[in-house]
Image (cartoon, rainbow, N blue to C red; front, side, top):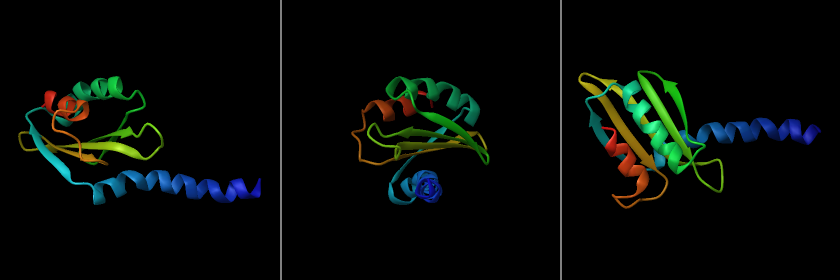
Length: 113
């Protein structure tokens, strides 16, 4: 029981740092949308959930973060942030692996622009 109590905070910290690590290490695909961050996410979240049902959205400062976990672990496969800009949203997509331009995650992100 003591071991569980000691390791649980470490596990939680590791899970929380994963999106930040992905942002630091992965190249970002930058896009612009004329839609507000909330309208963009309303379009994109169902599409990502078709790909991976465990995708989740979180409100961040000036926008939203959409996280798609990897199939085999809790580490993120993809992270997308949409933040408010003068004429809509700035959208940045981070991927753990370099995808082909026509993969489902990229196509979904572009289709909602």
